[in-house]
Length: 382
Image (cartoon, rainbow, N blue to C red; front, top):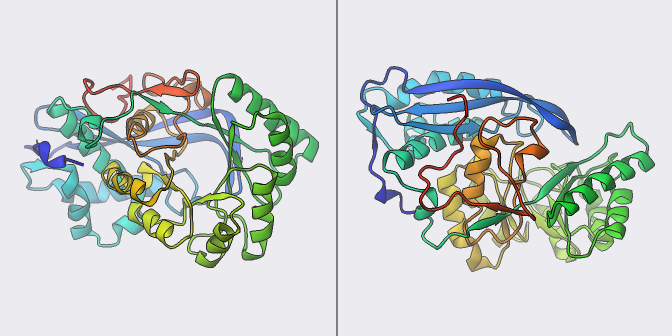
């Protein structure tokens, strides 16, 4: 990523340079996962303002509760309130590439305890750098970007208190609706107690074989479930994301060795380069990259190297608003992103998005383009 082409942004008087905003949005449909049920989100936005009044935006992907990775939006906000002044104090200029080192100089463990907070601050600075120089993010990718990015739809699931028949019917209805809209990949939340086997079997029976099915387990399975997860591949589940808990290397390797299903990691990687290490170590077959956790700079670096390993890659999301969703669309334009990403239409998640809505047409989202400066979506009330 040619960040050297971007000059640092001038920050001048540091008073009010970093601003935090909270917004509450209700999901159109609640989403059930093994780590909880989500009906709304209190979003944390990071705004970075340059001395010239140019504003850059980042969205913190940390959820309201700690069930996903332990990081919460409230804790991220408290962390940023405390560390942002130290990052910019006494500096006349700043670059996105220097943010992590500056944070680490103040708090060496910040990247492991607050990865999504750090990523949001880095993104806001990068967005401001791009807008200051009237530069489009895609122009830094090093390879010609795609004009449209392939989008996937998230189906969620039903809770364990719902009967199997009702769960199957509900998920199939959502799947058929998504397929009718042209989505080529469907993501289902799976795990013990979530009617997984029956849903996968019935979904594959009613869907065209060209529709890719991905099961997101959020680390819900245990080592003695390897054969069960492999059997889901035999039933027609194409991918499984994070089947076993983080750092359960042995189980992931055993599943990959069955050859029945493609495997990607999520919570099991603490940094973008960890994804490549897991690939080389045969813990996964494909790479899912979450900019909300890793930051866009690291994701681009990994994507530039992913093709060398013959791995597929997609961009993962965090129930993003348009601030992060538009940024993810632009990253999904990278030619190494070969699989459908979590960048579906805003209307699938929010009745009203914070930005101009992302719209998928026949499973594709048009990338803003090389002439459109910046990275992130801009809130309409900004």
